[in-house]
Image (cartoon, rainbow, N blue to C red; front, side):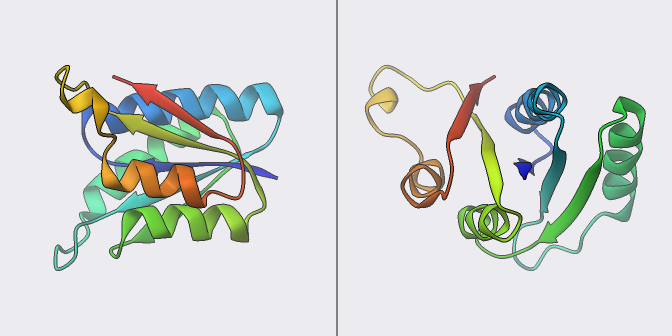
Length: 122
């Protein structure tokens, strides 16, 4: 069993990663981080090295999976492959009208996830 989280270099991604570390510790389980790069963007080895170093510091057993395709699909597939007990996603603050519509990626994760999803607001 695992906790799966996506890693994006933004406030939402950092909040999701922090919450996922907390959940993995509380559940005494492994953390799987889906490090995402936009299609056509070369992965930043420095950013991946920094992520791995940060995970080593927090002392949680972990795996980093890289993805450059559809982020929602990568998270759902990774959760199924690792028999995840929880997916953690970050959400950004939205305007009152925007709150009526959840982001398309987040909505797909919620609908397709093989396990519970924890949405963390930054």
